[in-house]
Length: 273
Ligand SMILES: Nc1ncnc2c1ncn2[C@@H]1O[C@H](COP(=O)(O)OP(=O)(O)OP(=O)(O)O)[C@@H](O)[C@H]1O
Image (cartoon, rainbow, N blue to C red; front, side, top):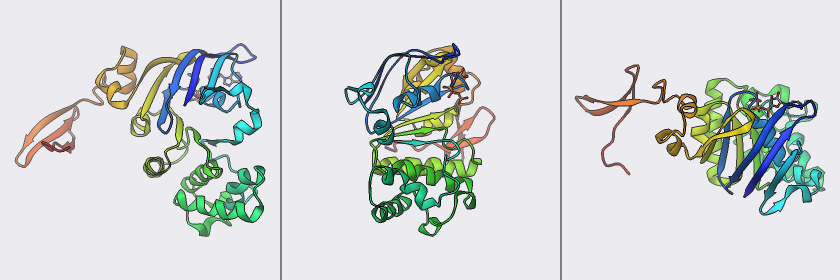
């Protein structure tokens, strides 16, 4: 469990990025921070692994303040996936993945063997292991980024807009892959996005943020869609625009669900579990 208590962050130039933020991030679940550009999502994420230090307040992991932990060790014990993969361009795929293990003192041979296994986990062909990042597609690079973050088998995985730079089809593939991985691995995932659909797809807990990381609403996707806490939330998630409004329509074959533009979105299955 990760717990933020009255956390604030003011950068040295006086920018208030986070004001008085409280949140419990439950273990083995995916929590998504979603909000507009500049609302403080990345700052929140980076405070968890001490890439950014809070100005005040505390962050605890399993009841222990992260300030009592060695910053470098803490950072290495937490997986971190960046938007552009953040891979080392002059290192082969396999060495990019094995780096964290080598830093942890795992012998080279063993680190490479384990890195190969992680490539399997994220669905990357082992044949790509000897390539350099520039010889991979954007989607493959992102998978290597995820593999690298998972290599040391961390309990916590931080993902900062990891699929922001890939095209919509690859993005959908990577989202599905993330759901599959999470069903298998049960990590505590904290995921940042500005895409509400991605947040609802991946999040067990979704945190909608306004400026200075003010929490507009926290809840499961269904709680938020069924009961938006404010006009801001309703507008952000699209209920106001009717983007999530569906109505039923009778056809010869049964009942279908139709969106506001009249497009059929699905078939209503009576009595399904
Ligand atoms: N190192 C820094 N120095 C000064 N201000 C910063 C620094 N990093 C971020 N900020 C500012 O803090 C605020 C929050 O930034 P942050 O990157 O956390 O937001 P974000 O929600 O992740 O944005 P985006 O979606 O655009 O990545 C913004 O106003 C930003 O300009």
